[in-house]
Image (cartoon, rainbow, N blue to C red; front, side, top):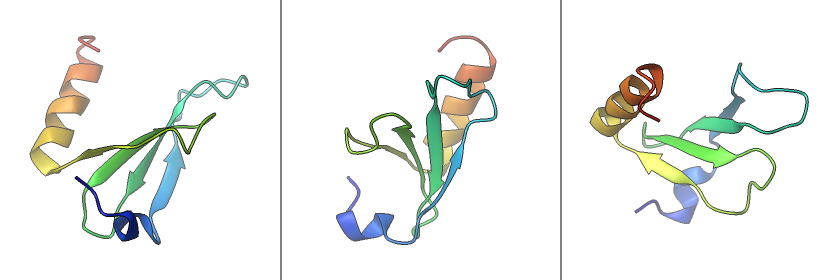
Amino acid sequence: MAKRDEFDGAVWHKSTYSGSDNGCVERGVLRSGRQALRDTKDRDAGVMVFGAGAWREFVVAVRGGAL
């Protein structure tokens, strides 16, 4: 579980697959080095946080069409 201060200074990037309707996600690199995802339209709705191994597995699943 991420601590609230872990998000301080996070650098967020909007997905390059984003459309003009703002229906996309943003990836953030946290101070701890972990990766985070959030909904662009509702940034306060919550954040998914991944360690290095879980992030790699997530990316492989997305690229492979499993997600």
